Length: 360
Image (cartoon, rainbow, N blue to C red; front, side, top):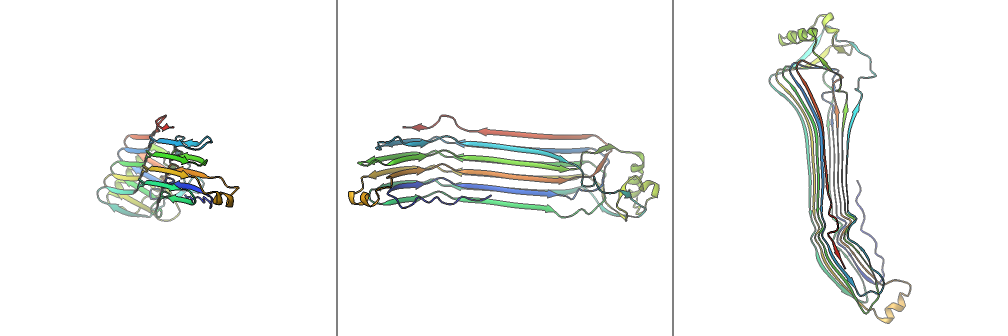
């Protein structure tokens, strides 16, 4: 993401106030490849949940009063936009196009007593308070106030290193979860008065055009080939439980190998595989702005005959965005001795005000 620059208001006669255009950005990527093995054996139950929760909330109750100019003023106090985009993507296993060999007789076993935790979590929060009170009174000047354009950003990248094993055996249950929480909250209640005395300026007010967006994606590679446990694999499990480091070739043929010694992670308890992202943007941009443009002198107007006299107030254009992705590399084949439970959950809420502004 890129932040916007402060606008150039030139050198003309008038008043410009930019008190909005605040930006808060969160971006996160988790790439979990630790479970990207050819085979997983789960002796009890298998649980897997993918979930995305996205909310946008805007409170934007403005009071705008414009008077004094002979032309029709431009007043924008709505047009807020809230967007939620979520993707659940399933790709083929990373082993789909690779050759498969027998596991062979020699096995290298790492044993974990108790439960195994593979947890990756990111929390990103932006708090921005930009509550301004300002007054502009001028005649013969270029008067520019920039009290907004604050910028906050968080960027995170987590990559779980490398695939260390060919086979993971879990004596208990497998608990897998990929979850993304994204929340944007904007308070943008403004009180704006723009007036001209003896002058005919071009008058414009923008207290809306706020944009809130969430974009989340959970991408799974493999993990969808779930099979019932077969007797030969139960025998392999019993042999490894007894401390065996070599397997009869007939049994080894049941497990996909890579042509060398088979690397095994043996877990005596449950396996917890969790990837989670929390992203929150909270902005309070409550502004009070009074502008009074008096009539410029005749000599000054003669120096600027082709330039319009201007009054401009911008307290909107605030932007909040969350962007998160979880890439989860799963086993090519998973054998389960118990029950299989899988869920995909999506919750989206967009709370945007309608017709709450008072513009005169």
